[in-house]
Image (cartoon, rainbow, N blue to C red; front, side, top):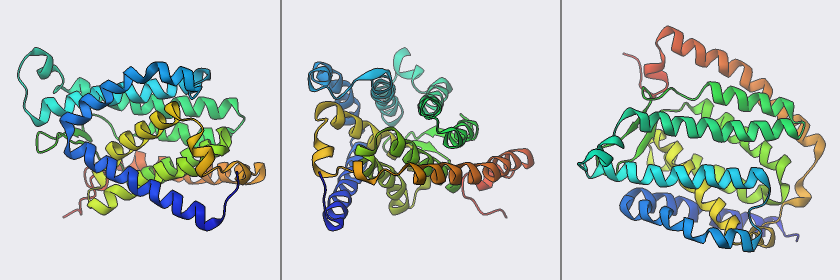
Length: 276
């Protein structure tokens, strides 16, 4: 289905706003969020019947996002409510931060592998750089005690930008039909922490926008093709240039990242603290 620029702009803007409102609601209502995402597993049969999840990548993608989102939800409850007991205490330990770090690494890696399968080697290189430059846990990761048990990750502006342009290029190649809607979830995750003036909320915004989007696609796979089909946007030459662009900006970034760690400047630069 085609559509005017105005139609796409209005639909995408509305979806971005809805996603940011969902992030805000999930952050503020952390107990509800924990049980909601657990309950989404009950919709598993509908994923199969709708045909919204097919092939190894789709199954791996939705499970590798929904399951960690559930774990994160209960970890937030454990920290925000200062829950006692062996189970709850375990969710407060550093292994949880390493687990979440590993899930982020895994999600980038799986898309990078898919990029290689599709022959997008330069974009895959950018994905590999993103894996290497995720700020280390637990030093740059934490779960707040109060008020909402938020997951805080001190990613850099350049890491966020590279992630956004790399992931957008990946989706453009892997499924151009859903490119417009995928741009929405990427922009929502970028804009939300800017609006809140809390850049450390980027990863938690990304968690909830991606989980929401994948759940919608699993339950109603024809929804986005009906309201914002971007199949005709695909251009193989543009994809090639896009991958090259991501490759070029990834090279200086990995050196800058390494230098920040080597010199100890990462304490300020990653947390966006002005050096005294």
